[in-house]
Image (cartoon, rainbow, N blue to C red; front, side, top):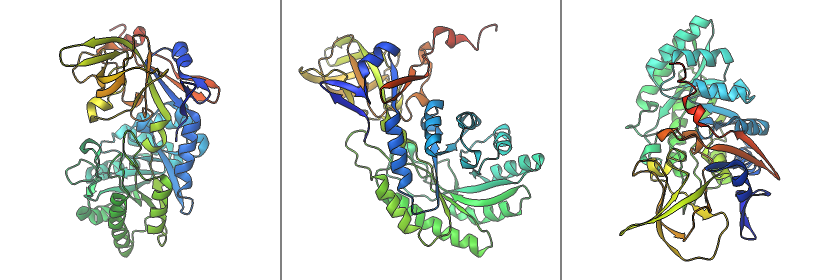
Length: 414
């Protein structure tokens, strides 16, 4: 459930009219609902109340400080994949002991920064990374807490670009290498192996891939105990999907019940890294119609948002629901909704049934709170959109709209 609803033929973000916010802050505009973020976090976190667990929000999906601060107030930790995300999480006030560091390409300075911050754990993804982590830790006179990211070769039944748990993917290490690498980690002086980590993909709409993965990790856990390696944490990553179109993903309570049952006899702290399931439907992208263009073959609705604002349709062929901010009873016809960027892939929707919207009117692109602004760019020298957080009847600009001067700020004087 989210808090973007029609009232009297007008789209509201909580208690405020979206059209008024578009006038105040301009378009394109990212709008986030504080009530939705809180509701989704609590719905997810409470689903695991029967387990010793830690919910670490996946910063990569929405790294705005305003969003991170709100989730920190709810008790969230952070799953990070870069030094920049570590910096953001700490700036947002997040407890370093609730931060886990994932990613296949951690750099020496990022590892050093995370060790100095005293984060909970590094999720290591290769033998080479283990050696680097050990060297940096020894240089600082520290012991690095780590888990090994396992690639279980489980099909997550999702888009291939966001599948991460197959042998062909770059992530993690195979089950056949795991025991040897854990023994190496145990013997390295700067490493303390504390956990098992796994993340098989994003936008999963079935529980079965998680359970299949968990069954394989439970076997590994027992093998580690038999070798005297007493891990304390089991990080199952994130990946629970949301409804963009016709998907029917499981509710977090169903997910929590399944994992609680599967782990009831295991003395482990469960770490979860939800992102999309918390933030995805907590945000919309508001865009203004510029032109209607008709060709012999197609109708195009040209809007002021583009692939640099929301790249998911171009990158993943992703579906986002579109709706008028002020619906009117008008004839619908098939159209492509496209932006001003000079690429054929610059579209928000293709072959979509859409009313005969007119220039100046507003459209809302739903489910844009995750992997929306976080993946935005300045392509075609387009300043990035503003981000606004709505909390009841108040709205806060949590990121100002960029200006032309911002586009060249780091190039001046060269």
